Image (cartoon, rainbow, N blue to C red; front, side, top):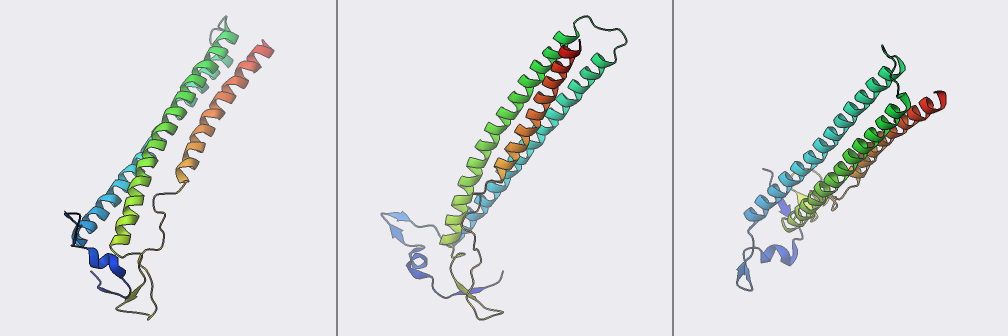
Length: 190
């Protein structure tokens, strides 16, 4: 572990290990453990967001495959069904209900995961500040200018999860629109 010389730590560092209102302040070791725990929590909830998006896309792909198979069976039947239009509209309703349910539940779950991820990120930044990672320091090796170990105080506060939600909603929307157009096509041509 590289050793750093802190140039301006301020009063915060001197408070570490002292008692305030009969409560012991966290030690640097406690803070380091907490920082690691927050990082692990962020990683777990970020992975959960990714997994839920992956599952949603997989389910939507399965619905697309099933709808495509139904459309092919209607367009190229071995035995022509008698209620083609009703089947097509039933297909549209079924696809719409499943696609909306998948998109909505995934949206809600990703929101919840991101809220927890953001909470872990905020605590990670607070702990990093207490450890002095945002302080200007003078490295023992290298250039003589002060730098900080961390510069981004918004860890875990990004909006990338919104793009994932938009992708899922767009995919679900395309499925609903295509099956709707298929039902309209069969209604107009039959």
